[in-house]
Length: 235
Ligand SMILES: Nc1ncnc2c1ncn2[C@@H]1O[C@H](COP(=O)(O)OP(=O)(O)OP(=O)(O)O)[C@@H](O)[C@H]1O
Image 1 (cartoon, rainbow, N blue to C red):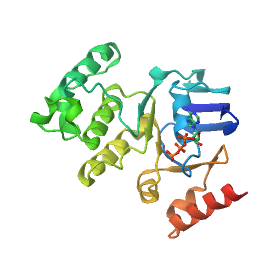
Image 2: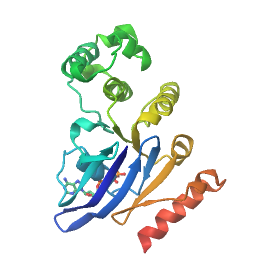
Image 3: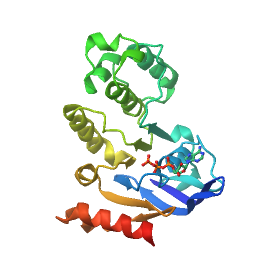
């Protein structure tokens, strides 16, 4: 399975943010998407999830050699600022989410079993989402891909608001499911990229480029990445 990016460009007014992106992401890998503030990482994710239209170019998904347009149903998108129905309880929301997706789910777990995975306790499950902390909302968003297991999972700075225990559990979960998915993870935390990711992709000057894998093993990893991002932005 592959996620294929072909000639994607996007400008806002006269600012060219994404410049003719071409790239292939492969199943079984967790990709760290690195870039400076304002490099266009969220814009790229918004285009993949069809929340934003590209000016040019398209994304495709190739499964068993058959290629089709990437659709929002092929992916789960975990936003850095969770967007959830605040007027429902966590439990009501997950029940609703399972109901609307039930035709697509293979052996779904019980609602409470899902909450066990993300360690939201019994009492909190029945509170309004409005009262949840940022980290709890983030965990609830994560459940959406845990339940639905779509081919492509996009995570926009998701672990920063999670406590260390839950962050570790989510990392474990991502490692466990990676073999069946394409996971792209935007982060500014270089140590996290090093810990969790198989490949590093830089978004710089509107272009995507794969960094050398050996960089992950390099003891000066952080310095090298910073150097690379600085160099590219000054080109
Ligand atoms: N809807 C919009 N209208 C105008 N400009 C926008 C819009 N969305 C994004 N931009 C601009 O596009 C550029 C890329 O923004 P984007 O949020 O994609 O960057 P990012 O890499 O996710 O940044 P960060 O790491 O700071 O979250 C920025 O200059 C931003 O101001």
